[in-house]
Image (cartoon, rainbow, N blue to C red; front, side):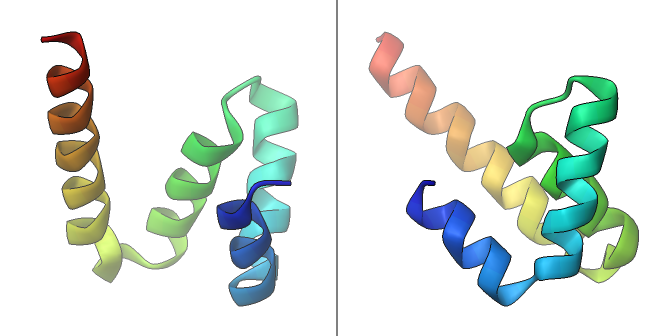
Length: 65
């Protein structure tokens, strides 16, 4: 298990468990399922998800260029 996955299980076991179930049922990736569940249960963290998406796009655009 990756380091981020371990930390998620320690810090937020209920969210991780729900994300694992969602991932299994829908076929969605575990990271995407975790973010979706986390935003559903903690909508005040939506700005963090937007920051994560923006950072990911910037990093991938630098690799492609």
